[in-house]
Image (cartoon, rainbow, N blue to C red):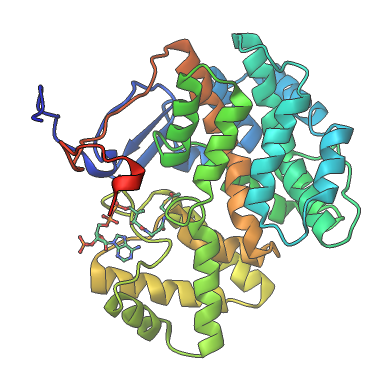
Length: 381
Ligand code: ACO
């Protein structure tokens, strides 16, 4: 059997393949620039908030004062979980990893959403807003339940980031901590056709619903080559600390063994990820403030070693590890926090996919056996 038409060349990992036009964000891998809807990430980190950035990502323009207040109120009003979902989260196995709990939680929210079954534009927006509002509540409720604590109702007066810290800790965070987390959420909110966003778009392109798309995205973000890298960075820092070795020596050992160093490298950036310097600043400042800058110092030594030995720069996940650790957040919640932020980009991409849809269906090049004859089971040797 020969091919009737030769298969086109394979593109491993779809590297460099363009699958859509997008007005949502621009990632310039050569120059190390990231732009949301025309605004640089540096300026948004300096001046915007997660709520405003989300409004920008969804609507394409910065809101005016009234629009922003309305959007903030809408999000705050949608934070609470319905009783059935909350009860289910309480019963999740406490040993489950939080990303798996979140993946299941998002799927559960799809069972009870009042707009389920309606994939129209307005219903999808309402479902998207509920997901943006409720994902932090899901993460915090699971974390408290697994610690044997009662999940807390959202605090309607606090901003998105501050409310998450409140639901996690049980007390209102100081404004500095809340602002650091707020900026982290801005930095992680959107990033072009990354793996989890692509997963969401593949699911959406079958005309499935937004909860299915976001469940796909959460499952994809979980992997250590994507969002899961921030937790893996913290594990590595702890391992270096436990061993009491020089970070540079540990990294050289890893490289000699052919292991990847988590938090470094990127498919698109060929220079420093523009989000990394902002997180690096937070890691340094929080280390100084908490009086425990060992994780920051270790991170700096790892960075120098990776640049010297491999010429590879850190990505967004590297300094988020020491930053979140300094905020007192457990390492297995680092990736769920990524999801708390990235849901904004996911919703924007789901809407964009519906608005200009074509089934996403690539091909595989068949390299298996050919021309075999079927032998009945009794005659096989
Ligand atoms: N540590 C050591 N070497 C690395 C690393 C790393 N972190 N990243 C890339 N390299 C090396 C590879 O070994 C490979 O070398 P080779 O050509 O000699 O074999 C070369 O650089 C190219 O690496 P690939 O894995 O082919 O690059 P790809 O574009 O497929 O992968 C990825 C990008 C997955 C991000 C990769 O850099 C990696 O695994 N990094 C560690 C995990 C991580 O931090 N992921 C988070 C990414 S950002 C995000 O998703 C939010």
